[in-house]
Amino acid sequence: MQYSVKLDGFEGPLDLLLHLIQTYEVDIYDIPVAIITEQYLQYIHTMKELKLDVASEFLVMAATLLAIKSKMLLPKHEEDFFDQQMELDVEDDPRDELVRRLVEYRKFKHAADELKGREAERSLIYTREPLDLSSFEKEETNTQVTNVTLFDMLQAMQKILQEKVVRAPRQTTIERQEIPIETRMTQIKESLRSFGGKKKFRDLFNQGNKEHMVVTFLALLELMKVKTVNCEQQDHFSEIYITLIEE
Image (cartoon, rainbow, N blue to C red; front, side):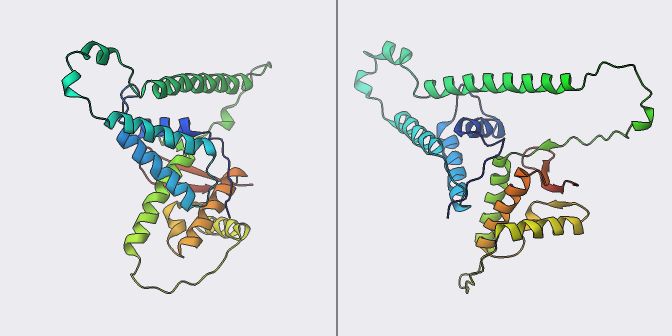
C-alpha cells in the first residue's frame, strides 16, 4: 500500500534539484547532469522503497534529466566540425531550459522566504507602552541548529538502509509482523520521553527488519506533520536529532 505524506519542505522536483545543487555545492549554471541525475534517481528509489507516494511530476523530472543526459552524451561528427563550428558555438545547451526554470524558481522561493520573514517580524510589533521585560530574558546559546527537510531525512535513511544490507546475513528467516503506524508513533514518543525528549535519528532504526524501519520512518513523518516532534541538524551531512515537542 502506498502511503502519501505531505510536508511544507517537500514541495516538488525543483525543490529536490535545488537541494542537491546546494548539498553538493555545484554551479547552477553548469550542472553536472550525470551526477545530479544519479543522486535524483537514488532519492526516487528511496521514496519508493519507503512506500511514499511519488508524485507524477517527480517522475517527469527524472525522465527530463535522463533525456538531457542522453543528449549530452551524443557524439559530435568530426568531419563537420570546421563547417559547423559557428553553429556549435551558439547551439543551445540541453541544460538551458532546466537552468532557466531552476533560477526562476529559486527567485520566487527566495522572495517567498523574504515575505515570510517580514510577516514574522511584523507579527512581533505591538503598539503599547514599553515594559520591563528583564525577568523574561533567557540565557543565550551559541548552538545554531537548522530545521531538517524531508530530503535530509531521506538521505539519512539511504545510509541506514545501505548499512542494513551490508550487515544482513546471507540466509535468514523472515517473520512478518505488521505494526500499525499509530502504534509505532506512540512507541517513538515513549522512547523519546525515556531519553529526556531527544534522541538520534538512527537510534530509532537500530532494531527490527526492513518493514519495521519503513513503518518507523512513516510514523516519524506523521509525528512531524502533527508537530509532535522536531528534527534538528547542525549542518549538512551531520547527525540528525529527533526532539519531542512538549504539549
